[in-house]
Each structure stands twice: as structure tokens, then as C-alpha cells.
Image (cartoon, rainbow, N blue to C red; front, top):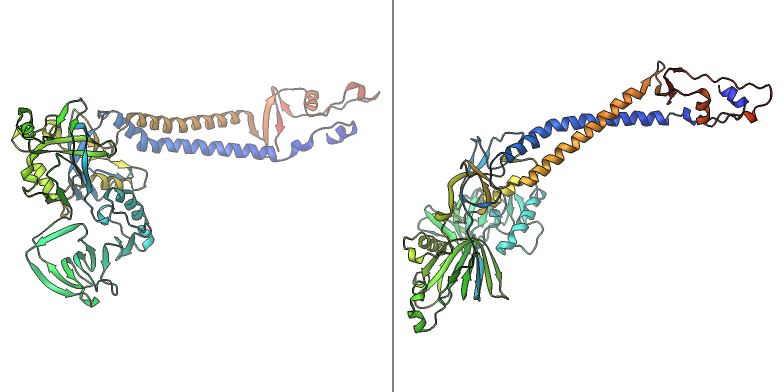
Length: 537
């Protein structure tokens, strides 16, 4: 054919003989097959990871509006018929954490105006209580704890000056550099002073955040000689490296002193935070006025309206507080257990009284649960009035698990796992949650119907569309492509004449170009009606 075409000056584009088009078609088919396989497999896995959980969540009957939950108990167990949170939903945990919560409606939204002499304090806690326990083999394994501490330390005002290498690896455990001594190392414990809680020679300084009272002591150890303290275990009172064991029972409390000024009329508690001040009045979300003791003259004190508030300090517990010192305003969110506590209970007649963190909260609990209804502030309801379920299981979501594998459960348990049952006397964690009014089996912290629908639509539509497109491409290719006996890939098209074919590639001369007595040769093209084949090689 090439000989005859060249003879008559035909200009066929012989680049069609190159292997490039065939290679592109082969790669395209392979890509379509891979997309079809992966999209089909993803539909199978997403059924267990997304579709079924989304269906159960949408049918769970949980209310869209959040209420308030308070952690009552945290249990570590290997009986994991249920868990508050675990990683990777396709697995089954052998050891888990179970949290029980109290469920109530949200409290009052309060605003207090004309506030002065404000005192805002936060009771600190040790670094190790702000992060999780983490095993390690080198210091770099503890870097995640540095980031987690820096996110939470600002609230407690205990952020270190040096934000690098806050935690170190000691005895295969990440510990705070500024709070912990490893007595197995040379000259690490030779000058121990204050109270230390030790475990196998790893001693944590208790004195910054706690003070422990005790009656009985045991043996004395001279830690100036490392050999005496490499296995030190227990609570110790140390002075210049001489440590005396403190025997049980002992009472450890938070080292936080609240100075109660007799002139204040308001105390608001929010976890480890305490806000005190003297305000003119308060108001709830329904614009109901909360009267405060602002009487200054004897005549004012004798009025009948002031009898309920005379000589009393209003107290309440709120989930969070906001202070605007410039405007003299305090905002309290989700406030409960409003009560008026007589000043003699909180202050001495001689003037300022000092109460530690634990005593102040015990007084508040005793007064808020008092049978004396006259002291109750009606605009701030009690937890009994708001109670929905006194006890319910707490789940991170309806599936009890997450699939991100980014230690979300670790963060979740740190945020909601404080149950106030340990020696530190920490406050119980309070947080928004979602419940089902039809049953009290469980409540969840995460529940978003719109986000669940969007996730379901995205994870279902993308693989389905890819699967349809790839399968359609493969189906069409099977109709228009065939492999010849020689192994060449050929494209089957509609039937056209030989002349039209040559014209399409620029190789048919016009009649005027042919000389007399010259006959245009017939160029044979293999075809089978109604199709012919083009070699793609």
C-alpha cells in the first residue's frame, strides 16, 4: 500500500502506526478497572464504618438540643460489653473506660451588673493531671504531651516559661521535668524538699498543688546517698534529702486559699475557678431580677424587702464564666443551685476569712442542699429541679468509638473523665450531651444530624459515581475495541469507503491531479460489514 501511495504522491499520515495511542488506551482501561475495584471495595468497608452507624444514629431518637451532663464515676475494666470511647470501630477492646453521668436540663443564663472588687482565681493542678499516661523509650516520645499541656495550661495559669521538652522519659514513663525527680539517677534526689509522692524511685512534687495532713510517720531515708532511695515508694515528707515516710491515713487537699471579703455579695463557682465580687443586681435570661445585698444604712437593712438577702452572699455553680471588668459585668452560663449563704458561715466577725478550695465547695454544697427554702434563689434552679436521668452511660457517640486513629479517645477521656473521687479533690467534669427522652440507657457527647447526613451523602455518592463511570467506560470499551489474532488492539468504527478513509488522512488525489491513462489503485482495507477495523498500534 505504501508503495502505491508513494507512486501517486499520496500524503498519508504514517504516524498512525506509532504505539502511543494503543498505550494510552491500555492505561485508561487499567485505570478504569482499578477505580471500579477500589470503589466497590470502599462501598463494602464504608457500609460498616459509615452507612450502618449513620443509620443507627439517625434512628437513635436523640434530641437535637444539648443538655448538661456531669461525670459521676469513671471505671477502668476489662469487662468491655460497653465503653465510653475506643479507637477503631471494627475492633473490640480488651481494656476500656466506662463513664457514668448525671443528666439534667440546662441551668440559667445569668448577668450581674455594677460589679466591683472582682477576684478571679483558678486552683492549679499538677501537669500529669492535664495529660494522659504515656509509655516511652526516649524523650521524643513525650512530645505529644507537650502539645496537650500547652492547650490546657493557660486556663490554670501554669504554663511553663520554656515550652520545649516539658515532659521527659524516665523509667519508660513520660513525666513532667519541673515536678518529677528520678532517684535512680545521680544527684537527682539529694536535695529533696517538701512532700513527694514516689513510685519505685520516681518522685512527684506534691507541694505546689496539694498539702497533705497526717498523724503517723514511718521510716526515714537519706536520699543524699542514691542507693537508699532508688526504690522509694509512698508519700514522703522531705527536708534537704532526708525523707520520712507518711503513713496512712493522710488527708491531701488542694493548696488554694480563697480570701472571703465581708463586703462582697456574690460568689460564683465554675470547676476549679472561683469568681467573687460586689455587684448591684443580677438578671436571668427571662429578665427576672436577682436581688443582692447592697444595703449600707440601718434603714435599708430594716426594710422587709431586704430581709431575705440581708447579710447573705449569693452563691451559684456555673459551667463557664465570662468577666467584663471594663463594663463591671459577669456572665454565667448554665448556672444552678443558687443559694444565699449567711456571711458568718463564710467570714469571721473580725474581718477577712481564708477558706481553702475544698472547704468553700463543701459549704456551698451543704447550703445548696439545705432544707431551708428561704435561702434558695428561685431564678437559679437546683439540680433536682432540672434532673432528667440521675444515672446514664456516657458514649462519645452512638457507636462508642472513633475511626480517625488520632487518639481522639484520649482527649475525650481527659475532658470528661474527672469524677472527683481521687485524692486531689478535683471537680467533676461538666459538658453538653444529647439524650433520648424515651430511655435512659445512654447519652452521647457527639451528635449532629446534619453532619451525619452530609457525611453519608459524600461517602456514598463519590464511590458510587466513580464505580458507575468506570464500569460504563469498561462496558463501552468492550463494544468498540477488539484484539486481533496478531495481538493488536483495533478500534471498530462505522463502514466508510476506501476513498473517504484516505481522504480523512490526506492521501487521496483529486481527479485533476491524475494523468491520462493512470488508474488510481484500489487500497484494500480489511473490514467486515457493517464495521471496519483501524489498527491502533
